[in-house]
Length: 166
Image (cartoon, rainbow, N blue to C red):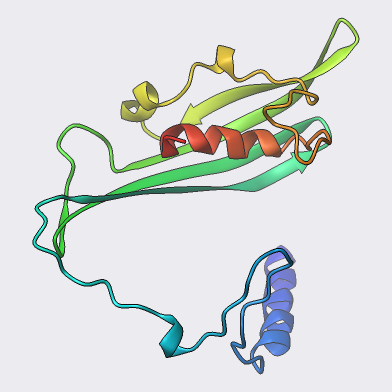
C-alpha cells in the first residue's frame, strides 16, 4: 500500500515538473538575481601558488518532527585540493554523519531544547560538541531568528555548524 502511494506521488511530481524549463533563479529580496547565462560565470584561473584549497560544507534535514522532538540527519564533508588533484587528509575525517535528537524539556516552568548526538561511526566523536553544551532556551539570542523564538528544528542547523567549523 505504502509503495503504491509513493509511486503515485512520484508520477504526480513528474507530471508537474517535467515540462518546466530551468529558468532564472528566484530569490526574495534583498538579493540581487543574475540570469543563468554563460556570460555570468567566470573560469577559475590557475596561479603559481603552492597553497591548497580546502572546502567544508554541511547540511541537515528533518527525518521526523513533532512539537516536542525533532530527529535530523546531519552531514558535513571536507575536500582538499592541491592544484587540480584531490588530496586525502591524513589527520582528520573527510565526512561526518550523525543523527541528532532534539527534545523539548520543561524545567522550573521554562522550556529548553536538549540535544543527543548519534554518530554513524565512532571515529567522528572527537569532532562533535559535548551534548552538555547543546542545551538552549528558545529565547536564547544565539539561536533566535529575527528576534523570534525558533522552532525545535533550528537547533540541528546549529549542530551542523560545529563540524563545519563556523
